[in-house]
Amino acid sequence: MSENWWRGSGGLTSDPRIDFVGTSGVTKWSVTVATSGTRYDSATREQGVITTYVRASCIGYRADRYTEMNLKRGDEVLVEGPLSQYVPEGGDEKDRKTTVEIVRLEVLRRSRGKSASPEQGPPATESDGWATSDGEPPF
Image (cartoon, rainbow, N blue to C red; front, side, top):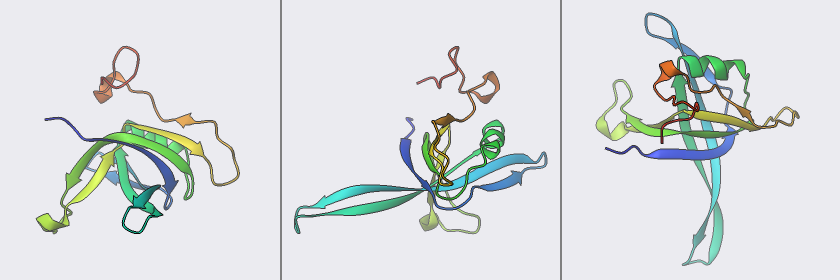
């Protein structure tokens, strides 16, 4: 089964959420990214802006590193990773949600007036299952 992969950029809609999960207290880092695109309606011959909100999260080593980046609402980021679906606790199958499991995150622009050269998140390591000899994901 092939994974659906998502790559997009946009602004953070709020400050990242940081949780500690499991009995060992592993860090979970979550954000929502607002992406905008244009859509042409041939019936009305008008072009409109469409905004999509994408949930993205990661756990463990990457979450610790992204927490250190101290991102805030409005920062523009590039996010990349596989899409996954889940049903929230107590939810019904019709309540299915889609999220991106962050594999790569870059800061494109800080909202606080700091211009950022792209900051990359942590490199892949042997322990995270994505590493290859050059540190890139194996695809």
